[in-house]
Image 1 (spheres, rainbow, N blue to C red):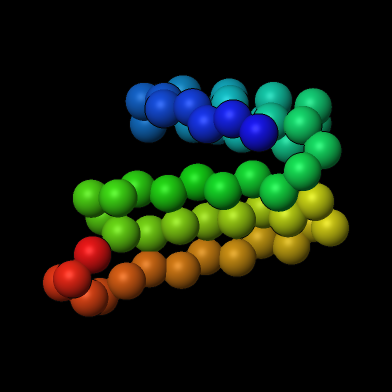
Image 2 (spheres, rainbow, N blue to C red; image 1 turned 135 degrees about the vertical axis):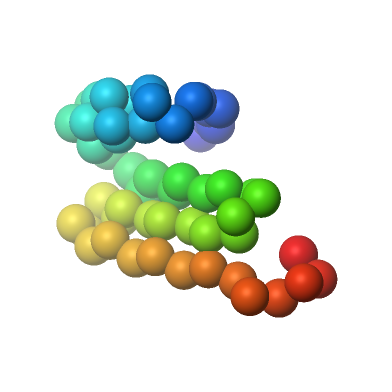
Length: 55
């Protein structure tokens, strides 16, 4: 397991590489905007965000 920090313009290039070469769930999130996307190894994509001020 590992994590990376990338610039927005690198996202799609990294996403393509990760999905094609890393057989596990992939989580992408933005702490400032409070959203998260998961692409599961089963092929599902889920998105969520928080409206809470506590995060």
